[in-house]
Image (cartoon, rainbow, N blue to C red; front, side):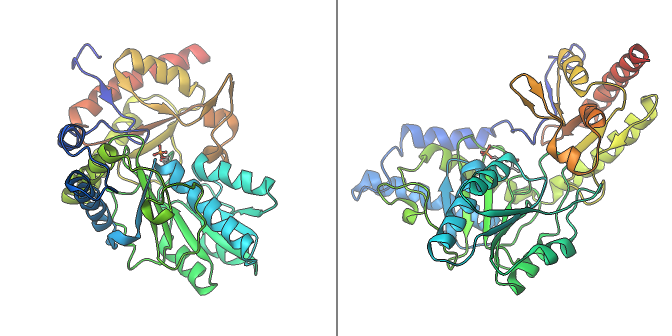
Length: 390
Ligand SMILES: *Cc1c(COP(=O)(O)O)cnc(C)c1O
């Protein structure tokens, strides 16, 4: 906790969000009362089934889709894996093609699944991207081949917050009769996404990025999408994702979606305004270079990803932690060796600049007062670390 405000200033909402008190209440009701198995036919089962279908309706409604097309999973990761493995393996079984196209800035749930598919003999193309962090639809047009089955491009990037032109990308896929998947984990509940109007066939979403519990997510599937399940069992979720449903999680996810529905768009605008002011304060207070990673306008309101050339993002993160401020680095650490972020390198940052980056993601609790305090501490540390470095 910080000394001045006497509480944690949490600025890592793209990693996870605190669970909303209304969500906790809903989950407690399921744990204490509606604990039946929704597949059971007697009253206690039917009570649980109602909870399950209520949650499905609330979430599908936030996507402007029909509840019958929404399938619960254990999170965004499983939804992404199911989209790639399920669609590609089904296509191979039916001899419909062997080629997958993804963006170079996908979450590891897509990236690593694509890598596994490569080891199984599928062909994967990673689209080029420039310093804006936004895919040029023309690049997709030329990447699609006769045996392309699926294109997967995320709606909003989790590191730099850039918003991809999914409508154009999806339209290109439609015109070539290729399936289009989007990982909408970072945009869901924040930006409007209309699965009925947009040319998207599969959409991944997750609960814990929208003030719901962890370990639950969903995939939205257009009914005609040919997909093989990855799991086998009792046949729940129409066999798309079998296994007894995570009922408290699903109910919490539904409540979290209902709360987002009341503030969608509005909250994104509030955070965008706050973020822009915050950036101007930082630019005033910090001596020397401050670089914004990725396009600043076609970007989620909550996201700021900055490089401070000459300093280590990780040193800055740890210094801010002692001040009671939680941010993250642009680079993902993997057991001992710190590889620069694949997103930052894809948009043309050299490894050193990538390592000098931090990601700040605002959320519901973020106030102007918080960001003034963060500006002071951030500038103090950057200026101090820079003096030290030269
Ligand atoms: C968090 C995240 C995921 C993974 O979701 P989990 O529910 O944590 O498994 C996938 N894609 C993106 C873009 C994310 O931000």
